[in-house]
Image (cartoon, rainbow over all chains, first blue to last red):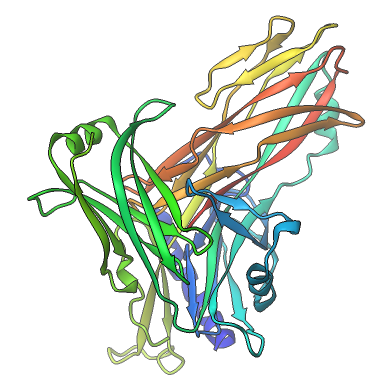
Length: 281
Length: 164
């Protein structure tokens, strides 16, 4: 299934590329700029899928695709897991995810499908297994001639960012129940200036919870703000969600009592997970 | 390829269309076509993290570029050339919340000589605006030692935009 469809998808994607490019705003184009779609993969029983990687930079670039382990911290960041810390669940996730190619050189606007297959070992325990797929460009070595020409008295410094995208690959086995609730909605001042809407989220059960937060003034039908892609992973029971918001929005949220509601993602049913009515201070 | 639409999302989406094998050559209206719409993310780099050129003396000092671009050259050093914080743009679905992970430090080397710069990102979490756009910057503090050897120093640091 992966083989034949992959080719077709790939060919047809070329036609779609022009449409898609129009949505990318004009930006300074760096070497290694990239597009990745989709941004999240959940496999419930399915054996495989694919991810599109596209070079949206102005120059040819070589990209490396790898698997990483990350754990969510109570502030919602995804911290890397060092080799000594890897647990059984994470080890199993790395072992069952197969993917190719792992390195690809692409001219500008050339998409490439990265095929992902899952091979679960016999007797795999029920649970949620997860790894994060990292896509990033490998910087080109600087030409030696360039370096000689820049001889100066003092220090010259060249810092190259290796930048990329990580997306989660989540494999669910068995019936996994998970619930979440939100509490303690509040407005905070950010250290760097501006405001943040913050609230606490707690989770119970064997799986992760993923969805979107809508904040609506009580009595209104349209939300004042929507934040998508909010997750709490199984390694955590409690986290704080902190969303930067413009000052006008902070003002609007303060002006009347609001409802903060957490919904499942639309493609997962879109059901209400938890909500609170509160007056934000 | 049985699903017609996996998800339809406002803002920026990638369209992946595929014709079934029987429909690939058919021009009639009965051609069997499906399309899957995937959420996408684009990450692009703008300015580099540039400390310019630094003239050193017997005593070392720090050179810093805050994430907002504010430049500060230690009193024991002379700084010339252009400086900037590194900038990155993210483009995706409006309202999406993503995390940003930046290395805590970077080692700069010129042969056997080295220096270290600590790094700070402007944001650890971003919410893409209504048009699906967001940006962030990375600044740093470069520590120049006493009698730091002249030369062309280079280093690499990792920045990732993390989706949940």
